[in-house]
View 1 (cartoon, rainbow, N blue to C red):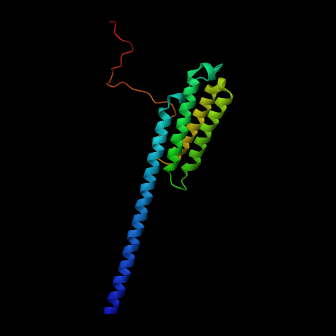
View 2: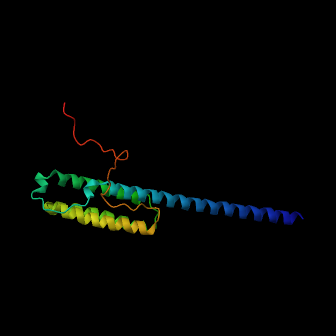
View 3: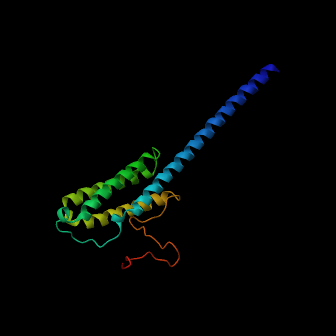
Length: 174
């Protein structure tokens, strides 16, 4: 009887340890997926709030590098956005399906920065090309994961704070 008790206790300990190990792996997997979805949602929201990416009719901007302050602002904003994409990449799992999409986003930002440096007068056209590429990338992220928000780059808008109430548009006369 003693021999069977030892085998039963030993087998039970191994099975219990294996179950605990498996449960720990499952919890870590779920946590990493949640952290990745959170980072991707943060990225999509950040892209959505980038005013420089709002849809415009691309027009030439002669001497943009010297005379157009929006050219420098756009370049700074897209350079910072590239850093946000890099941060999201750090929070993805090693073999995540999101990594190629994030790489494409980085390449699109790099291409805008290069093109707007080489042809500053066409930077608005390059911005709209970047908008289209980022929009396609957001859609690809969204198609793989239902937890990712479906927001268009640069299209965030403020609404009225109270139904029917609009903020004042001018200062009252003193």
